[in-house]
Length: 323
Image 1 (cartoon, rainbow, N blue to C red):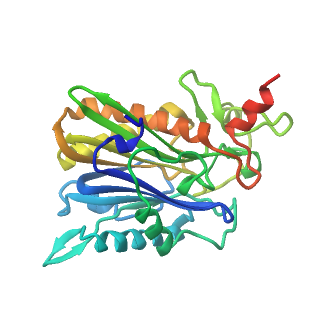
Image 2: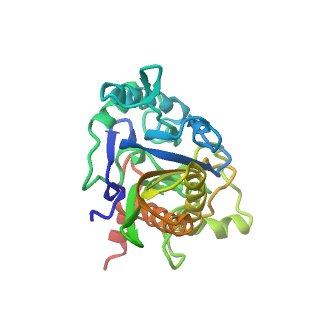
């Protein structure tokens, strides 16, 4: 096992990274399609084609998910992913024509690099074209290139977010994996509640604790729509569309475990889920595992991140703390 989302057979991940503009996009492809679902929990989402994932909708299978920077402008990159998939003969059959189903969601990273440069059609195409299984890049890549966390006191005191992934095996060879793009308003915390990355104290530069700042009445530097954590959960289990939506819903618990606070009015938190249908599986067990792999993927995103655009990362604080 590679301990990432591509441990689920038929799942591939590709990134497009623009370090100069501090933005990018990430694609999760399903070679044979997968039953898809979604749960949108944040109050400021930017999404495309999420409605087709809900129960009682005609379309059952997705062919890819796009996670992208560039705010709503970045949704244009989904067209490039569709173009790539069409060339591969993938898509929903409509009278002999193929229409690839590519739900997408965005993060707001325009304040980090060059706001006029956003992922577009070509970016999505290149990310899909480069999608691979096995070892995948994490940290300051793809949709996580310009991601930041801890914005209670404004972007200047935030830290670097990024892309992370994790997977586990449960039961009889049932795999559950997640990939997360972390651009949260709150802090990312470990299993003991210690801040890994988040709002920094203006005097010491160390994590100040967003939860404590909020409940103690610190004035918030308002940033509507500038924060979002996105995740994709994938499993090789055989699940119905209703069950896959339940897995996406339960996967949101991973945000609550690893981000403090999560699901604020400033976040657009969105979790996608997909089931490839290879193995029988219990939706409750898979949903519980989904929460765990999402939480671990979120933590890995900030642990693997590197400084971009002058925004310090978890590893920079770790280096400073060494004697």
